[in-house]
Length: 590
Ligand SMILES: Cc1cc2nc3c(=O)[nH]c(=O)nc-3n(C[C@H](O)[C@H](O)[C@H](O)COP(=O)(O)OP(=O)(O)OC[C@H]3O[C@@H](n4cnc5c(N)ncnc54)[C@H](O)[C@@H]3O)c2cc1C
Image (cartoon, rainbow, N blue to C red; front, side, top):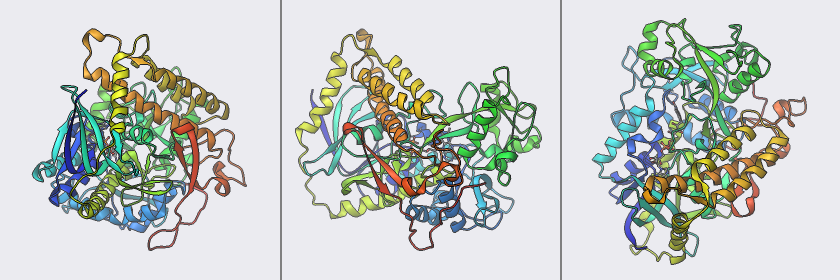
Protein backbone atom coordinates (compact mmCIF):
# COMPACT_ATOMS: atom_id res chain seq x y z
CA UNK A 1 0.00 0.00 0.00
CA UNK A 2 1.25 3.47 -0.90
CA UNK A 3 1.60 5.76 2.09
CA UNK A 4 1.59 9.52 1.56
CA UNK A 5 3.33 11.89 3.96
CA UNK A 6 2.49 15.36 5.26
CA UNK A 7 4.59 17.44 7.63
CA UNK A 8 3.62 19.98 10.29
CA UNK A 9 5.06 21.75 13.28
CA UNK A 10 2.33 20.25 15.48
CA UNK A 11 -0.22 17.54 14.95
CA UNK A 12 -3.19 17.16 17.28
CA UNK A 13 -5.42 14.11 17.26
CA UNK A 14 -8.86 15.12 18.51
CA UNK A 15 -11.04 18.18 17.95
CA UNK A 16 -12.91 18.19 21.27
CA UNK A 17 -12.38 20.91 23.86
CA UNK A 18 -8.83 19.82 24.76
CA UNK A 19 -7.56 19.49 21.19
CA UNK A 20 -9.14 22.73 20.05
CA UNK A 21 -7.92 24.72 23.07
CA UNK A 22 -4.37 23.53 22.36
CA UNK A 23 -4.77 24.25 18.63
CA UNK A 24 -5.78 27.87 19.32
CA UNK A 25 -2.56 28.43 21.27
CA UNK A 26 -0.39 26.77 18.62
CA UNK A 27 -2.00 28.24 15.51
CA UNK A 28 -2.20 31.76 16.96
CA UNK A 29 1.55 31.62 17.59
CA UNK A 30 2.04 31.12 13.86
CA UNK A 31 2.97 27.43 13.88
CA UNK A 32 1.73 25.06 11.18
CA UNK A 33 -0.88 23.10 13.10
CA UNK A 34 -2.97 20.12 11.99
CA UNK A 35 -6.01 18.80 13.87
CA UNK A 36 -7.16 15.30 12.89
CA UNK A 37 -10.67 14.22 13.87
CA UNK A 38 -12.73 11.16 13.07
CA UNK A 39 -15.90 13.26 13.20
CA UNK A 40 -16.67 16.86 12.29
CA UNK A 41 -15.01 18.91 15.09
CA UNK A 42 -18.23 20.23 16.63
CA UNK A 43 -19.59 16.68 16.90
CA UNK A 44 -16.90 15.67 19.41
CA UNK A 45 -18.28 14.50 22.76
CA UNK A 46 -17.50 17.85 24.41
CA UNK A 47 -20.59 19.09 22.57
CA UNK A 48 -22.74 16.93 24.87
CA UNK A 49 -21.48 18.47 28.13
CA UNK A 50 -24.43 20.00 29.87
CA UNK A 51 -23.88 21.31 33.37
CA UNK A 52 -20.94 23.69 33.39
CA UNK A 53 -17.27 24.51 33.79
CA UNK A 54 -15.90 25.25 37.25
CA UNK A 55 -14.01 28.39 38.27
CA UNK A 56 -13.95 30.21 41.59
CA UNK A 57 -15.10 33.49 40.03
CA UNK A 58 -17.28 34.20 43.06
CA UNK A 59 -19.88 35.95 40.92
CA UNK A 60 -22.85 35.15 43.18
CA UNK A 61 -21.19 34.50 46.54
CA UNK A 62 -17.64 34.41 47.96
CA UNK A 63 -15.36 31.70 46.52
CA UNK A 64 -11.61 31.03 46.39
CA UNK A 65 -9.35 28.80 44.31
CA UNK A 66 -7.96 27.17 47.46
CA UNK A 67 -11.52 26.01 48.34
CA UNK A 68 -11.84 24.64 44.81
CA UNK A 69 -8.49 22.90 45.26
CA UNK A 70 -9.58 21.41 48.59
CA UNK A 71 -12.81 20.07 47.03
CA UNK A 72 -10.90 18.57 44.09
CA UNK A 73 -8.35 16.79 46.30
CA UNK A 74 -11.13 15.49 48.56
CA UNK A 75 -13.24 14.49 45.54
CA UNK A 76 -10.23 12.58 44.15
CA UNK A 77 -10.06 10.68 47.47
CA UNK A 78 -6.49 12.02 47.75
CA UNK A 79 -5.30 10.16 44.62
CA UNK A 80 -5.03 13.40 42.58
CA UNK A 81 -1.60 15.03 42.27
CA UNK A 82 -1.71 18.21 44.33
CA UNK A 83 0.74 20.15 42.14
CA UNK A 84 -1.49 19.62 39.08
CA UNK A 85 -4.65 20.35 41.09
CA UNK A 86 -3.27 23.64 42.37
CA UNK A 87 -2.20 24.56 38.82
CA UNK A 88 -5.71 23.84 37.48
CA UNK A 89 -7.80 25.51 40.19
CA UNK A 90 -5.63 28.62 40.27
CA UNK A 91 -5.82 29.04 36.47
CA UNK A 92 -9.57 28.39 36.27
CA UNK A 93 -10.84 31.99 36.48
CA UNK A 94 -8.35 33.09 33.82
CA UNK A 95 -9.12 30.35 31.26
CA UNK A 96 -12.88 30.79 31.71
CA UNK A 97 -12.61 34.55 31.12
CA UNK A 98 -10.41 33.86 28.07
CA UNK A 99 -13.12 31.57 26.76
CA UNK A 100 -15.68 34.31 27.33
CA UNK A 101 -13.50 36.62 25.26
CA UNK A 102 -13.42 34.00 22.49
CA UNK A 103 -17.18 34.51 22.30
CA UNK A 104 -18.58 31.84 24.64
CA UNK A 105 -22.26 32.75 25.28
CA UNK A 106 -22.48 32.11 29.05
CA UNK A 107 -25.77 32.71 30.88
CA UNK A 108 -25.71 35.93 32.90
CA UNK A 109 -26.63 37.12 36.36
CA UNK A 110 -28.84 40.19 36.67
CA UNK A 111 -25.65 42.26 36.91
CA UNK A 112 -24.35 40.83 33.64
CA UNK A 113 -21.73 38.55 35.21
CA UNK A 114 -21.22 34.87 34.19
CA UNK A 115 -24.02 32.77 35.74
CA UNK A 116 -22.83 30.11 38.24
CA UNK A 117 -24.76 27.19 39.75
CA UNK A 118 -24.00 24.74 42.58
CA UNK A 119 -22.65 21.29 41.61
CA UNK A 120 -21.79 18.04 43.38
CA UNK A 121 -18.85 18.31 45.78
CA UNK A 122 -18.30 22.05 45.25
CA UNK A 123 -18.29 23.67 48.69
CA UNK A 124 -17.27 26.95 50.24
CA UNK A 125 -14.73 27.43 53.01
CA UNK A 126 -13.08 23.97 52.89
CA UNK A 127 -16.15 21.77 52.80
CA UNK A 128 -18.69 23.85 54.75
CA UNK A 129 -21.70 24.25 52.44
CA UNK A 130 -22.49 24.10 48.68
CA UNK A 131 -21.18 27.02 46.61
CA UNK A 132 -22.10 28.35 43.14
CA UNK A 133 -18.97 27.58 41.11
CA UNK A 134 -20.17 25.98 37.85
CA UNK A 135 -20.23 28.54 35.01
CA UNK A 136 -23.01 27.57 32.64
CA UNK A 137 -24.68 28.26 29.34
CA UNK A 138 -28.14 26.81 30.21
CA UNK A 139 -27.74 22.99 30.04
CA UNK A 140 -25.68 23.20 26.84
CA UNK A 141 -22.34 24.44 28.18
CA UNK A 142 -20.18 22.04 26.13
CA UNK A 143 -22.05 22.91 22.96
CA UNK A 144 -21.43 26.62 23.44
CA UNK A 145 -17.79 26.01 24.39
CA UNK A 146 -16.94 23.76 21.46
CA UNK A 147 -18.45 26.14 18.92
CA UNK A 148 -16.60 29.11 20.40
CA UNK A 149 -13.30 27.19 20.23
CA UNK A 150 -13.93 25.93 16.69
CA UNK A 151 -14.61 29.43 15.42
CA UNK A 152 -11.48 30.74 17.08
CA UNK A 153 -9.48 28.00 15.31
CA UNK A 154 -10.98 28.82 11.92
CA UNK A 155 -9.84 32.40 12.49
CA UNK A 156 -6.34 31.21 13.47
CA UNK A 157 -5.98 29.08 10.28
CA UNK A 158 -5.73 25.75 12.03
CA UNK A 159 -5.72 23.03 9.37
CA UNK A 160 -8.49 20.48 10.02
CA UNK A 161 -8.46 16.91 8.70
CA UNK A 162 -12.05 15.90 9.19
CA UNK A 163 -13.17 12.26 9.10
CA UNK A 164 -9.64 10.98 9.32
CA UNK A 165 -8.97 8.11 11.72
CA UNK A 166 -5.59 8.11 13.47
CA UNK A 167 -4.37 4.49 13.56
CA UNK A 168 -1.06 4.45 15.41
CA UNK A 169 1.60 6.54 17.07
CA UNK A 170 4.98 6.65 15.30
CA UNK A 171 8.14 6.53 17.41
CA UNK A 172 11.76 7.05 16.42
CA UNK A 173 14.66 4.74 17.29
CA UNK A 174 15.38 6.83 20.40
CA UNK A 175 11.76 6.48 21.58
CA UNK A 176 10.74 10.04 20.73
CA UNK A 177 7.35 10.53 19.09
CA UNK A 178 7.43 11.56 15.43
CA UNK A 179 3.74 11.79 14.56
CA UNK A 180 0.85 9.50 13.67
CA UNK A 181 -0.33 7.36 10.81
CA UNK A 182 -3.96 7.94 9.82
CA UNK A 183 -6.61 6.83 7.34
CA UNK A 184 -9.01 9.09 5.45
CA UNK A 185 -12.45 7.56 5.89
CA UNK A 186 -13.81 8.67 2.53
CA UNK A 187 -11.03 7.15 0.42
CA UNK A 188 -9.24 4.68 2.70
CA UNK A 189 -6.00 6.50 1.88
CA UNK A 190 -3.30 6.05 4.53
CA UNK A 191 -1.04 9.01 5.35
CA UNK A 192 1.81 9.70 7.74
CA UNK A 193 1.43 12.98 9.64
CA UNK A 194 4.93 13.85 10.76
CA UNK A 195 5.40 16.65 13.28
CA UNK A 196 7.88 18.02 15.78
CA UNK A 197 5.25 17.68 18.51
CA UNK A 198 2.20 15.39 18.70
CA UNK A 199 -0.77 15.85 21.05
CA UNK A 200 -3.40 13.24 21.83
CA UNK A 201 -6.75 14.75 22.79
CA UNK A 202 -8.90 11.80 21.78
CA UNK A 203 -11.39 11.85 24.68
CA UNK A 204 -12.69 9.01 26.82
CA UNK A 205 -13.53 5.36 26.32
CA UNK A 206 -16.91 5.03 28.04
CA UNK A 207 -17.93 2.57 25.35
CA UNK A 208 -16.07 -0.26 27.07
CA UNK A 209 -19.25 -0.50 29.20
CA UNK A 210 -22.66 -1.65 28.04
CA UNK A 211 -24.53 1.26 29.58
CA UNK A 212 -22.83 4.61 29.06
CA UNK A 213 -23.58 8.32 28.73
CA UNK A 214 -20.76 8.53 26.19
CA UNK A 215 -21.07 8.99 22.43
CA UNK A 216 -20.46 5.94 20.20
CA UNK A 217 -17.18 7.54 19.09
CA UNK A 218 -15.73 7.42 22.63
CA UNK A 219 -13.64 4.34 22.02
CA UNK A 220 -10.37 5.24 23.72
CA UNK A 221 -8.37 5.41 20.49
CA UNK A 222 -5.58 7.59 21.89
CA UNK A 223 -5.23 5.40 24.96
CA UNK A 224 -5.13 2.26 22.79
CA UNK A 225 -2.57 3.77 20.40
CA UNK A 226 -0.37 4.85 23.31
CA UNK A 227 -0.54 1.38 24.88
CA UNK A 228 0.43 -0.27 21.59
CA UNK A 229 3.38 2.13 21.36
CA UNK A 230 4.67 0.96 24.77
CA UNK A 231 3.39 3.89 26.88
CA UNK A 232 1.94 2.82 30.28
CA UNK A 233 -1.63 3.74 31.26
CA UNK A 234 -2.28 5.35 34.64
CA UNK A 235 -5.08 4.61 37.16
CA UNK A 236 -7.33 2.88 34.65
CA UNK A 237 -9.30 1.12 37.43
CA UNK A 238 -11.12 4.38 38.19
CA UNK A 239 -14.32 4.93 36.19
CA UNK A 240 -17.01 7.35 37.17
CA UNK A 241 -20.62 6.21 37.17
CA UNK A 242 -22.86 9.26 36.86
CA UNK A 243 -25.81 8.98 39.23
CA UNK A 244 -28.42 10.17 36.77
CA UNK A 245 -28.54 8.40 33.42
CA UNK A 246 -32.11 7.97 32.10
CA UNK A 247 -33.19 4.45 33.19
CA UNK A 248 -33.09 2.07 30.22
CA UNK A 249 -31.54 4.64 27.83
CA UNK A 250 -28.31 5.76 29.53
CA UNK A 251 -28.70 9.34 28.25
CA UNK A 252 -27.31 11.83 30.74
CA UNK A 253 -29.36 14.11 32.99
CA UNK A 254 -26.88 16.71 34.21
CA UNK A 255 -26.00 17.13 37.87
CA UNK A 256 -26.97 20.75 37.21
CA UNK A 257 -30.55 19.50 37.72
CA UNK A 258 -29.69 18.77 41.35
CA UNK A 259 -27.70 22.03 41.39
CA UNK A 260 -30.93 23.85 40.51
CA UNK A 261 -32.73 22.03 43.36
CA UNK A 262 -33.59 18.54 42.03
CA UNK A 263 -34.02 15.76 44.63
CA UNK A 264 -33.47 11.99 44.41
CA UNK A 265 -36.29 9.87 45.87
CA UNK A 266 -36.74 6.13 46.44
CA UNK A 267 -39.93 4.07 46.03
CA UNK A 268 -41.53 5.52 49.15
CA UNK A 269 -40.75 9.07 48.05
CA UNK A 270 -38.01 9.45 50.68
CA UNK A 271 -35.13 11.88 50.02
CA UNK A 272 -32.64 9.11 50.82
CA UNK A 273 -29.45 11.15 50.29
CA UNK A 274 -30.10 12.80 53.65
CA UNK A 275 -29.11 9.48 55.25
CA UNK A 276 -25.90 9.02 53.25
CA UNK A 277 -24.60 12.62 53.07
CA UNK A 278 -26.33 14.72 55.76
CA UNK A 279 -24.47 17.88 54.77
CA UNK A 280 -24.22 17.90 50.94
CA UNK A 281 -27.27 15.59 50.46
CA UNK A 282 -28.09 15.26 46.72
CA UNK A 283 -24.97 17.28 45.90
CA UNK A 284 -22.45 14.86 47.41
CA UNK A 285 -19.66 13.57 45.16
CA UNK A 286 -20.82 11.39 42.24
CA UNK A 287 -19.35 8.11 43.49
CA UNK A 288 -21.07 8.63 46.84
CA UNK A 289 -24.47 9.32 45.26
CA UNK A 290 -24.20 6.42 42.78
CA UNK A 291 -23.40 3.94 45.57
CA UNK A 292 -26.28 5.26 47.69
CA UNK A 293 -28.65 4.71 44.75
CA UNK A 294 -27.44 1.15 44.12
CA UNK A 295 -27.72 0.40 47.85
CA UNK A 296 -31.34 1.65 47.85
CA UNK A 297 -32.14 -0.61 44.89
CA UNK A 298 -30.30 -3.62 46.33
CA UNK A 299 -32.20 -3.24 49.60
CA UNK A 300 -35.57 -3.25 47.84
CA UNK A 301 -36.33 0.48 47.90
CA UNK A 302 -35.91 1.03 44.14
CA UNK A 303 -38.82 2.23 41.98
CA UNK A 304 -40.84 0.39 39.31
CA UNK A 305 -41.87 -3.29 39.16
CA UNK A 306 -38.23 -4.44 39.06
CA UNK A 307 -37.13 -1.89 41.71
CA UNK A 308 -34.28 -1.07 39.32
CA UNK A 309 -34.18 2.74 39.34
CA UNK A 310 -34.84 5.76 41.57
CA UNK A 311 -36.58 9.07 40.77
CA UNK A 312 -35.11 12.51 40.12
CA UNK A 313 -37.75 14.99 41.16
CA UNK A 314 -37.94 18.63 39.99
CA UNK A 315 -41.72 19.00 40.08
CA UNK A 316 -41.34 21.45 42.98
CA UNK A 317 -39.24 23.87 40.86
CA UNK A 318 -40.77 26.88 39.13
CA UNK A 319 -41.51 25.79 35.53
CA UNK A 320 -39.83 29.02 34.40
CA UNK A 321 -36.51 27.86 35.94
CA UNK A 322 -36.85 24.54 34.12
CA UNK A 323 -37.60 26.23 30.81
CA UNK A 324 -34.71 28.70 31.02
CA UNK A 325 -31.99 26.81 32.93
CA UNK A 326 -32.75 23.21 31.92
CA UNK A 327 -34.57 23.24 28.57
CA UNK A 328 -32.47 20.45 27.04
CA UNK A 329 -33.07 18.22 30.07
CA UNK A 330 -36.83 18.61 29.71
CA UNK A 331 -36.51 17.54 26.06
CA UNK A 332 -34.38 14.51 26.99
CA UNK A 333 -36.86 13.45 29.71
CA UNK A 334 -39.80 13.71 27.32
CA UNK A 335 -38.01 11.86 24.51
CA UNK A 336 -36.12 9.16 26.39
CA UNK A 337 -38.20 8.60 29.55
CA UNK A 338 -41.62 9.67 28.26
CA UNK A 339 -42.18 12.05 31.20
CA UNK A 340 -42.49 15.84 31.38
CA UNK A 341 -40.30 16.71 34.40
CA UNK A 342 -42.44 19.79 35.12
CA UNK A 343 -45.19 17.34 36.16
CA UNK A 344 -43.53 13.97 36.89
CA UNK A 345 -40.16 12.77 38.25
CA UNK A 346 -37.54 11.27 35.90
CA UNK A 347 -36.50 7.58 36.35
CA UNK A 348 -32.68 7.43 36.67
CA UNK A 349 -29.84 4.90 37.23
CA UNK A 350 -26.05 5.24 37.66
CA UNK A 351 -24.40 4.99 34.22
CA UNK A 352 -20.75 4.84 33.11
CA UNK A 353 -19.68 8.40 32.42
CA UNK A 354 -16.01 9.29 32.73
CA UNK A 355 -12.54 7.80 32.63
CA UNK A 356 -10.39 9.18 35.44
CA UNK A 357 -7.22 7.40 34.28
CA UNK A 358 -5.38 7.63 30.97
CA UNK A 359 -2.06 8.51 29.38
CA UNK A 360 0.22 9.74 32.21
CA UNK A 361 1.25 13.40 31.93
CA UNK A 362 2.60 16.16 34.12
CA UNK A 363 0.74 19.48 34.37
CA UNK A 364 2.63 20.81 31.34
CA UNK A 365 0.86 18.17 29.22
CA UNK A 366 4.08 16.21 28.63
CA UNK A 367 3.62 12.44 28.56
CA UNK A 368 5.56 10.66 31.32
CA UNK A 369 6.76 7.08 30.98
CA UNK A 370 8.56 5.22 33.77
CA UNK A 371 11.90 6.76 32.81
CA UNK A 372 10.63 10.34 32.39
CA UNK A 373 9.24 12.60 29.67
CA UNK A 374 8.57 11.01 26.25
CA UNK A 375 10.09 13.57 23.84
CA UNK A 376 7.63 15.06 21.35
CA UNK A 377 4.54 13.51 22.93
CA UNK A 378 1.72 15.31 24.79
CA UNK A 379 -1.78 14.40 25.98
CA UNK A 380 -4.67 16.46 27.32
CA UNK A 381 -8.34 16.09 28.20
CA UNK A 382 -10.15 12.90 29.09
CA UNK A 383 -7.57 10.60 27.43
CA UNK A 384 -4.86 12.02 29.71
CA UNK A 385 -4.17 11.54 33.42
CA UNK A 386 -2.46 14.68 34.82
CA UNK A 387 -3.69 13.54 37.47
CA UNK A 388 -6.26 16.03 38.71
CA UNK A 389 -9.27 13.73 39.10
CA UNK A 390 -7.57 10.94 41.03
CA UNK A 391 -10.06 8.28 42.09
CA UNK A 392 -13.17 10.38 41.38
CA UNK A 393 -13.74 13.51 39.29
CA UNK A 394 -15.89 16.42 40.44
CA UNK A 395 -18.55 17.52 37.98
CA UNK A 396 -17.51 20.51 35.78
CA UNK A 397 -13.82 19.82 36.45
CA UNK A 398 -13.47 18.06 33.09
CA UNK A 399 -14.37 21.05 30.93
CA UNK A 400 -11.94 22.99 33.12
CA UNK A 401 -9.26 20.31 32.60
CA UNK A 402 -9.69 20.69 28.80
CA UNK A 403 -9.13 24.45 28.96
CA UNK A 404 -6.23 24.42 31.44
CA UNK A 405 -4.29 21.45 30.10
CA UNK A 406 -5.22 22.10 26.45
CA UNK A 407 -3.62 25.50 26.89
CA UNK A 408 -0.60 24.33 28.90
CA UNK A 409 0.21 21.52 26.48
CA UNK A 410 -0.06 23.98 23.58
CA UNK A 411 2.42 26.24 25.36
CA UNK A 412 4.84 23.36 26.12
CA UNK A 413 4.67 22.25 22.49
CA UNK A 414 5.52 25.76 21.25
CA UNK A 415 8.53 25.85 23.56
CA UNK A 416 9.78 22.47 22.32
CA UNK A 417 9.08 23.15 18.61
CA UNK A 418 11.03 26.43 18.71
CA UNK A 419 14.11 24.52 19.92
CA UNK A 420 13.95 21.77 17.27
CA UNK A 421 16.21 21.74 14.18
CA UNK A 422 14.38 22.44 10.89
CA UNK A 423 14.97 18.97 9.42
CA UNK A 424 12.65 16.20 10.61
CA UNK A 425 14.19 12.82 11.53
CA UNK A 426 13.60 9.65 9.52
CA UNK A 427 10.60 7.53 10.54
CA UNK A 428 11.65 3.86 10.83
CA UNK A 429 9.83 1.83 8.14
CA UNK A 430 9.02 -0.85 10.72
CA UNK A 431 6.74 1.60 12.54
CA UNK A 432 4.64 2.16 9.42
CA UNK A 433 4.65 -1.55 8.52
CA UNK A 434 3.11 -2.50 11.89
CA UNK A 435 -0.01 -0.49 11.09
CA UNK A 436 -0.18 -1.71 7.49
CA UNK A 437 -0.02 -5.29 8.77
CA UNK A 438 -2.97 -4.60 11.08
CA UNK A 439 -5.03 -3.22 8.17
CA UNK A 440 -3.98 -6.09 5.96
CA UNK A 441 -4.94 -8.69 8.57
CA UNK A 442 -8.37 -7.13 8.88
CA UNK A 443 -9.00 -7.14 5.14
CA UNK A 444 -7.78 -10.74 4.74
CA UNK A 445 -9.33 -12.34 7.85
CA UNK A 446 -11.67 -15.24 7.16
CA UNK A 447 -13.84 -17.20 9.60
CA UNK A 448 -13.19 -14.68 12.32
CA UNK A 449 -15.47 -13.29 15.01
CA UNK A 450 -17.98 -10.53 14.27
CA UNK A 451 -16.89 -7.08 15.41
CA UNK A 452 -20.32 -6.27 16.80
CA UNK A 453 -20.67 -9.48 18.81
CA UNK A 454 -17.14 -9.28 20.18
CA UNK A 455 -17.64 -5.68 21.28
CA UNK A 456 -20.93 -6.57 22.92
CA UNK A 457 -19.32 -9.45 24.81
CA UNK A 458 -16.64 -7.07 26.09
CA UNK A 459 -19.18 -4.41 27.11
CA UNK A 460 -21.39 -6.90 28.96
CA UNK A 461 -18.38 -8.40 30.71
CA UNK A 462 -17.09 -5.01 31.85
CA UNK A 463 -20.53 -3.96 33.07
CA UNK A 464 -20.83 -7.13 35.15
CA UNK A 465 -17.27 -7.37 36.44
CA UNK A 466 -16.20 -3.75 37.01
CA UNK A 467 -19.33 -1.73 37.87
CA UNK A 468 -20.40 0.67 40.65
CA UNK A 469 -19.55 -1.96 43.31
CA UNK A 470 -16.75 -4.44 42.72
CA UNK A 471 -16.42 -7.97 44.05
CA UNK A 472 -13.20 -9.93 44.45
CA UNK A 473 -14.42 -13.07 42.71
CA UNK A 474 -16.07 -11.12 39.86
CA UNK A 475 -12.91 -9.08 39.26
CA UNK A 476 -10.84 -12.26 38.96
CA UNK A 477 -13.39 -13.83 36.62
CA UNK A 478 -13.47 -10.54 34.65
CA UNK A 479 -9.72 -10.66 34.01
CA UNK A 480 -10.04 -14.16 32.53
CA UNK A 481 -13.04 -13.22 30.40
CA UNK A 482 -11.51 -10.04 29.00
CA UNK A 483 -8.25 -11.84 28.14
CA UNK A 484 -10.30 -14.49 26.30
CA UNK A 485 -12.26 -11.79 24.45
CA UNK A 486 -8.96 -10.17 23.49
CA UNK A 487 -8.03 -13.32 21.54
CA UNK A 488 -11.31 -12.96 19.67
CA UNK A 489 -10.54 -9.29 18.92
CA UNK A 490 -7.30 -10.33 17.25
CA UNK A 491 -9.34 -12.39 14.78
CA UNK A 492 -12.31 -10.16 14.06
CA UNK A 493 -13.60 -10.25 10.54
CA UNK A 494 -15.53 -7.72 8.49
CA UNK A 495 -18.36 -10.02 7.52
CA UNK A 496 -19.82 -8.75 4.26
CA UNK A 497 -16.74 -8.25 2.10
CA UNK A 498 -18.82 -7.54 -1.01
CA UNK A 499 -19.53 -4.09 0.43
CA UNK A 500 -16.76 -3.01 2.77
CA UNK A 501 -17.18 0.58 3.88
CA UNK A 502 -14.40 2.30 5.74
CA UNK A 503 -16.86 2.81 8.58
CA UNK A 504 -16.89 -0.99 9.03
CA UNK A 505 -13.09 -1.01 9.09
CA UNK A 506 -13.22 1.87 11.56
CA UNK A 507 -15.41 -0.08 13.98
CA UNK A 508 -12.99 -3.00 13.87
CA UNK A 509 -10.01 -0.69 14.42
CA UNK A 510 -11.78 1.04 17.31
CA UNK A 511 -12.32 -2.34 18.93
CA UNK A 512 -8.52 -2.83 18.92
CA UNK A 513 -8.39 0.26 21.15
CA UNK A 514 -11.38 -0.54 23.35
CA UNK A 515 -9.92 -3.90 24.30
CA UNK A 516 -6.69 -2.26 25.48
CA UNK A 517 -8.75 0.02 27.74
CA UNK A 518 -10.82 -2.89 29.04
CA UNK A 519 -7.70 -4.95 29.83
CA UNK A 520 -5.99 -2.05 31.59
CA UNK A 521 -9.15 -1.41 33.63
CA UNK A 522 -9.87 -4.93 34.79
CA UNK A 523 -6.25 -5.90 35.48
CA UNK A 524 -5.58 -2.69 37.45
CA UNK A 525 -8.88 -2.99 39.36
CA UNK A 526 -8.24 -6.62 40.28
CA UNK A 527 -4.83 -5.70 41.68
CA UNK A 528 -5.94 -2.71 43.81
CA UNK A 529 -7.16 -4.42 46.97
CA UNK A 530 -8.47 -1.29 48.72
CA UNK A 531 -11.57 0.86 48.21
CA UNK A 532 -10.95 4.44 47.06
CA UNK A 533 -13.19 6.93 45.24
CA UNK A 534 -15.00 5.20 42.39
CA UNK A 535 -13.26 1.85 43.07
CA UNK A 536 -15.13 0.13 45.89
CA UNK A 537 -14.58 -3.58 46.64
CA UNK A 538 -16.51 -5.96 48.83
CA UNK A 539 -13.29 -7.28 50.38
CA UNK A 540 -12.14 -3.78 51.42
CA UNK A 541 -15.03 -2.61 53.63
CA UNK A 542 -15.37 0.36 55.97
CA UNK A 543 -13.48 -0.42 59.23
CA UNK A 544 -12.14 1.82 62.02
CA UNK A 545 -8.61 1.06 60.81
CA UNK A 546 -9.52 1.73 57.13
CA UNK A 547 -12.39 4.25 56.96
CA UNK A 548 -14.41 3.63 53.76
CA UNK A 549 -12.00 0.76 53.00
CA UNK A 550 -9.21 3.14 51.98
CA UNK A 551 -5.70 1.91 52.74
CA UNK A 552 -3.28 4.84 52.58
CA UNK A 553 -0.37 2.82 53.94
CA UNK A 554 -0.32 0.40 51.03
CA UNK A 555 -2.33 2.06 48.25
CA UNK A 556 -1.74 5.81 48.23
CA UNK A 557 -0.08 5.40 44.81
CA UNK A 558 -0.87 5.56 41.10
CA UNK A 559 -1.18 2.38 39.05
CA UNK A 560 0.77 2.08 35.80
CA UNK A 561 -0.40 -0.71 33.46
CA UNK A 562 1.80 -1.90 30.59
CA UNK A 563 0.28 -3.72 27.62
CA UNK A 564 3.34 -5.90 27.39
CA UNK A 565 2.48 -8.89 29.60
CA UNK A 566 -0.22 -6.93 31.50
CA UNK A 567 2.56 -5.78 33.81
CA UNK A 568 1.77 -3.35 36.64
CA UNK A 569 3.99 -0.90 38.43
CA UNK A 570 3.19 1.95 40.80
CA UNK A 571 4.33 5.54 41.33
CA UNK A 572 3.82 7.90 44.26
CA UNK A 573 1.01 10.46 44.42
CA UNK A 574 2.28 14.07 44.46
CA UNK A 575 1.09 15.26 47.88
CA UNK A 576 2.96 18.59 47.74
CA UNK A 577 1.22 21.47 45.95
CA UNK A 578 3.22 24.18 44.14
CA UNK A 579 2.84 27.06 46.62
CA UNK A 580 0.27 26.28 49.33
CA UNK A 581 0.12 23.78 52.20
CA UNK A 582 -0.92 20.22 51.25
CA UNK A 583 -4.52 19.13 51.76
CA UNK A 584 -3.92 16.61 54.55
CA UNK A 585 -5.33 13.08 54.38
CA UNK A 586 -8.59 12.51 56.21
CA UNK A 587 -11.81 10.51 55.96
CA UNK A 588 -14.03 11.67 53.11
CA UNK A 589 -17.48 12.70 54.32
CA UNK A 590 -20.10 14.96 52.70
C1 LIG B 1 -23.16 13.50 28.22
C2 LIG B 1 -21.97 14.12 28.88
C3 LIG B 1 -22.10 15.30 29.61
C4 LIG B 1 -20.99 15.87 30.24
N1 LIG B 1 -21.14 17.04 30.94
C5 LIG B 1 -20.05 17.63 31.50
C6 LIG B 1 -20.14 18.89 32.16
O1 LIG B 1 -21.21 19.50 32.24
N2 LIG B 1 -19.02 19.42 32.70
C7 LIG B 1 -17.81 18.80 32.63
O2 LIG B 1 -16.83 19.33 33.12
N3 LIG B 1 -17.70 17.61 31.99
C8 LIG B 1 -18.78 17.03 31.41
N4 LIG B 1 -18.63 15.82 30.77
C9 LIG B 1 -17.29 15.29 30.54
C10 LIG B 1 -16.61 16.07 29.42
O3 LIG B 1 -17.57 16.56 28.52
C11 LIG B 1 -15.60 15.24 28.65
O4 LIG B 1 -14.72 14.61 29.54
C12 LIG B 1 -14.80 16.12 27.71
O5 LIG B 1 -15.65 16.88 26.89
C13 LIG B 1 -13.81 15.35 26.85
O6 LIG B 1 -13.20 16.27 26.00
P1 LIG B 1 -11.93 15.86 25.13
O7 LIG B 1 -11.51 17.10 24.43
O8 LIG B 1 -10.96 15.17 25.98
O9 LIG B 1 -12.50 14.80 24.10
P2 LIG B 1 -13.81 14.75 23.17
O10 LIG B 1 -14.64 15.96 23.25
O11 LIG B 1 -14.45 13.44 23.47
O12 LIG B 1 -13.19 14.71 21.73
C14 LIG B 1 -12.40 13.64 21.26
C15 LIG B 1 -11.92 13.98 19.88
O13 LIG B 1 -11.00 13.00 19.46
C16 LIG B 1 -11.29 12.61 18.14
N5 LIG B 1 -10.77 11.25 17.97
C17 LIG B 1 -10.85 10.22 18.84
N6 LIG B 1 -10.22 9.16 18.34
C18 LIG B 1 -9.73 9.52 17.15
C19 LIG B 1 -8.98 8.86 16.14
N7 LIG B 1 -8.59 7.58 16.26
N8 LIG B 1 -8.65 9.55 15.03
C20 LIG B 1 -9.04 10.84 14.86
N9 LIG B 1 -9.74 11.50 15.78
C21 LIG B 1 -10.07 10.86 16.91
C22 LIG B 1 -12.78 12.74 18.01
O14 LIG B 1 -13.16 12.87 16.68
C23 LIG B 1 -13.01 14.02 18.81
O15 LIG B 1 -12.79 15.14 17.98
C24 LIG B 1 -19.74 15.24 30.13
C25 LIG B 1 -19.60 14.08 29.40
C26 LIG B 1 -20.70 13.51 28.80
C27 LIG B 1 -20.52 12.21 28.05
